Length: 353
Image 1: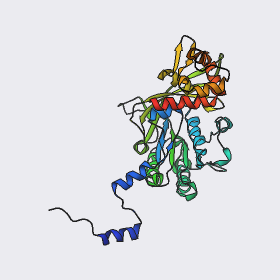
Image 2 (image 1 turned 180 degrees about the vertical axis):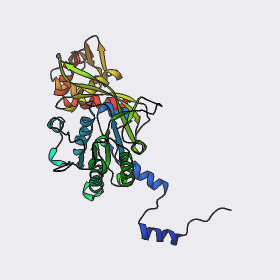
Image 3 (image 1 turned 60 degrees about the vertical axis):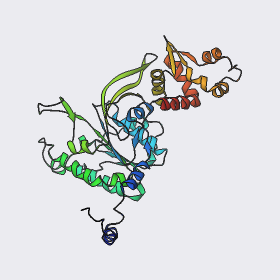
């Protein structure tokens, strides 16, 4: 015999006591679909299936100096364009001038940076401050960056001697995740956690693993690990580094994707360089030896005419010759000088993939 539906009076009592805590599946689905997308960079967004959903957890893991902090701050700079508050927990105490000045568009005055003053802050204090700030109505839709959980130190260790011991931190982080579990989606927070690799001494599985316990890994909607980095040189001078990411899981797409992000020293993630590489990979930019041709511009003759008013755009050969460059550096400079072309290329890539 089928069960009767819940008594409306009983439902009314629950709502009166706890608020509007009961919704249909479609109502929840509509709210989730209403969550906005947070952009990282063209290459990373494509690998993630579109970007990062607000109201979700993101973990960035990798070796030292591989670009985790710069990537986190780039996300912050992108989100500031939408007037999102930025909360940054400087647990490592190593947030430097080059970090704050090394990302284009990052508004330092509109960041709340949590750091120790006269005395070191314990893990409990850092995370308690994060809970309070993220819960505030004024910080609705904020980006909260914890850099890094690997550097958090439990109070009992902070007050003790130099004897090693990390057993307490995973438990503290587990409690933090539970406290923030409902706050993050309700406040539409983008929670970014930077963590490091540690040696796996169990004898099972990979030789190294992310620090800080399993709960944070389970909590993550998006997990990105740095596989490797390489120097990025222009005119025989190192101007940055290419970062190879592996997508372990994503809030917007399937796992297993990989991508290459380009970090330019003093600028952050170089969107234009990523578009140059993606354009070649998708065939929108034809490559023949050292020559690169923006063939996608054949579909945007009005823009070509704006750049070259005297050009006969009815002549395909002349059009292609006007957007042909010897070497990536010259093409890069052309895109920097012509933002409209850069925007067209980004849209063409997005529509293809």
